[in-house]
Length: 112
Image (cartoon, one colour):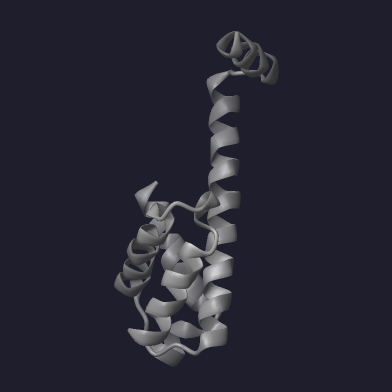
């Protein structure tokens, strides 16, 4: 999971050309993700807004990235993480042998 966080912080630097333009490396991507984790801790639905604010502010003030690029980075990484972890979670359920029927039955039992 931590490797995925690190790669998700670093890989978008390539997508948005930030590696060459701002000389950002893996440690910088990791740092942005760690700072963004603080944004997720703030009570908000799924870190929406708070993660973006902290990631954008960090990229602009610490690394000198333009506002537009920082916003693109924040939206891309947040959406990418959502898709990645939902997909991995579903894959683990399938590999574990858990069926959708078992999940709905367990939910019904827990609500009774």
